[in-house]
Image 1 (cartoon, helix red, strand yellow):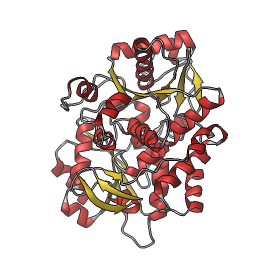
Image 2: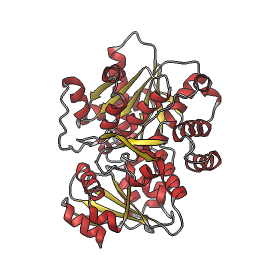
Image 3: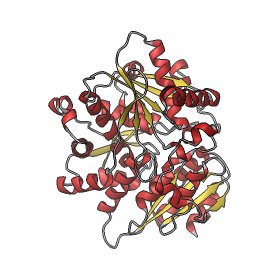
Image 4: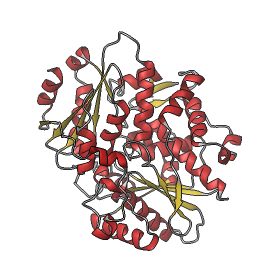
Length: 434
């Protein structure tokens, strides 16, 4: 697999180099030079394959021999070892539950696969791998559990002070070993900016072997394609062949993986980018002007991103025909008030508890179905996190119905350990250098 920078199509690096370097020196994002189409018979017969079988076939097609088949199969079986079911919620509408992994969030797909790929490529005697990650909620917890105890790695997680839920914060700050957390007095965008500045700093890069575990890393994006194929396989088993995906979108890595799946051959009718009031992309699609804004805190905190990094990847995928992207994507934004009403409606109508991010994805399907009343495509909205992570959001009636997973109960009572910094890069650099 050869990759280039979105800022320089002539660049060519190996998959291993892209995984460890995360960002090209020109501050673009790595993208594959070639996206091979999956065999048509494989797509037609998806319903006969398990999630692990699908994941292996997709990864093998993309990586093109960079990891031998037997080793890749072992990585897949070890990392993608939890289910991702679709469940009927309303007429011809399904929720894709992506929170059955260790950290109770969809980020487990990317973080677990990436940590094992990095561990596979690490050679004995090499410099310690310093993994930097900015999180608005769920990424940090998934990365922490994905890398916990991995030899020769040190993970530094930056999260915005007061802007993650109590359970999310426990997942970030109670691990110890090779995982450390920094509470930044700012927003997720500030955390992300500090990580990007670190990758561009010559002194830090001379001293340390830096890499990222955010969705800017191509090894995070690849495994997120798996569950799109698996969701479609589940539809095929119940006799449905047309699908629309509604994706709760913040940094646009999740929906970016969906577009990558489409490029590989997954027959998707439409993608819905469902955002909260951090609506940079919906405004861009409506006006043609891309105007990032400072992020605003909402109930759907993992989506509080004012300048989504992965949008450039999506644009790059459709560089030869931008009109194709416009036909394939619809974008809506929703307020906190609409989110709360949706949570209550979903519970009352379907006895289903949706986290605020999932509720926004559901709102996207409702808006799309209202705009296309004669379309009979099945809609799938992505449930990206377990509702137990957001206890302050739910009314008592709904809160009482949430079953708390054992891994959350185990976190209670563990001491928080996090350092505190402001948003200036000099302080963060001194912290890393120290």
